Length: 123
Image (cartoon, rainbow, N blue to C red):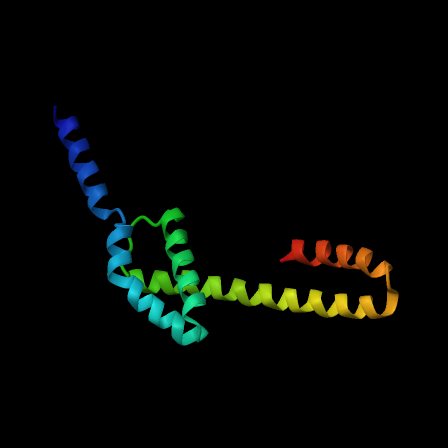
């Protein structure tokens, strides 16, 4: 009997510590969106990154979140870094493709495929 009470107390305690993503979304999404708008300058990109941030929060094993804004900022910053890296790689691919297209004609498509496979997999 006492072990069952202890289990109920433990489960109640764990539920009280679990992250309420809906509450965090309602409380912090407008703030995060405004912060991202300031960083990116584009409300549409800011909305995309904001939604991706909360998707990552849903899939994360967070346990207890004492500072949800700090955690959201870490996720959003990492997403911004990933976005920046993708644009860099995309720019490299485009510039290399332009170089090979001018110089090599039909062989450029083959070089493009090799370049894309090699660099995109490493990112």
